[in-house]
Amino acid sequence: MKVLSMRESKELGTGFGFKKFAVALGLSVMALPAFAQYEKYDDGSVDLTNDEVRWSIAYIGEEAVAEPGKKVSGYVTMLQMFYQSQNWAEMHENWKWLIDNAPIATVSIYARGAVMLGNLIKGTEDVAQKKVYLDELMHLFDTRLKYLKYLNASIPEGKRGRATEGDVLIAKANYYHIYGYGADGNNYTYNNIYDMYAKGINAINEEGGREVKGLYIQYFFSVSHELYKLAPDYYREQFLNDYLSSTEVCEKMLQLAKEETDPEKAQKIVDEYDKPLAIIEQVFAESGAANPEQLIDMFAPKVEANKSNLDYLRKAMTLLAANDCDTTEVYYKAAEYAYAIEPTYESAIGMAQYSKKQGKLQDMLTYYEKAIELCSTDARRGRISLIIANSLINSKQYTGALVYLDKAVAYNSDLAGQAYMKKAAVYTALGQYPQALTYCDQAASADITVSGSANRLSEKIRTAQANAAANARAKAEYDAYIAKQKAEEDFWGKK
Image (tube, rainbow, N blue to C red; front, side):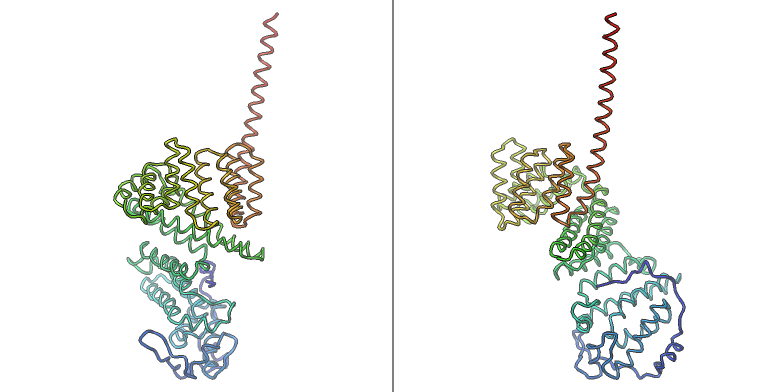
């Protein structure tokens, strides 16, 4: 669903008045009889078999197939014209008639109506009036949800304007987030906004997770961050989960680029989701929520209390591992309890890392291989190999990490881009910058979804390379100076 920009809308404009504009069109709009109401049922549905309203399915904006459609088309035309002239006050009167009497005439009632109401809220200092407009704005989205299947039915496949329930819910959350402040009194809280975003995102994920906008994920995470700042101890675990789910959604969206055969369209997908993902990661890194000591203090008693709860133990391991706490006692304890209940690849990895800490290298390799064995697909085995490689990188066991990165690509060639990124990180850590830059280029070529990350890493590597070269020159100059001084001392010492 294309939501028209609110921030870019201009201030209230002028235009034809409602009556004057109607005369100009040659329509006796004000003299029209009341539009026939739909027969409504207890479940909120409406009967669309009546000839008087059948036009609603066929009417798409450029045609009207029956007399009632022609009359309604006058209102639709004025809606469009008032929108173009940004005459929000006159458009509001026109819009009210349409949403009350012909709510499935056109999606413009909703897309452009939302922009109009947003501008009306901005354009008044009267708090009571702001509230009236805000209520109408929320009612707009609720009405669109009610008639969504009929609105979608009026739009040909592949045309703009079709929406899912999740699209509408998350757009409602976004508009409320932007315009609710100062209009909804004490009801405007981060908790309410968070719940609205979460409801929309959950609906979209249930519908397949392919239509949520990257900016909406970013906005949702920003609200989660605000809640965390208000009460860090209370919201920490929620914030950690939101970080994982938000980055997962963005990464899932980026995978669409791989399925897109048109390079231009693929790049558009990357442009939409790569930047929000980077912002989410930056906000999370700066939040301090992943402070290891605080995470350990939070999870230690919970792991002990849930030592028979496999689902909780797996979640705890995931959060701890994602925040560089997979070498802590609480992580090992969670893995041990989970493995005893039912060996999984997550708990096997935990046991492998625990064995490594104890110096039991053979046990470590056995558990790592067990983790791969417990996976049911090569795709998962490839991802486990990446996890193992990452663990080895964190332990500075770079040779082993490179071996498992090669295994990851052998299991699943789609992971080549990610594997090359990690190889670039390995060679950067080893100070072998040319090789690191080569792998960055290969990562960007192999997988468009990591191209943004690869380019950012390349910049950092070049900076490190330049610094290293400068340090090497400085050291060479210093060594030459010392050698010259020593030579002079030796020369004069012989005199």
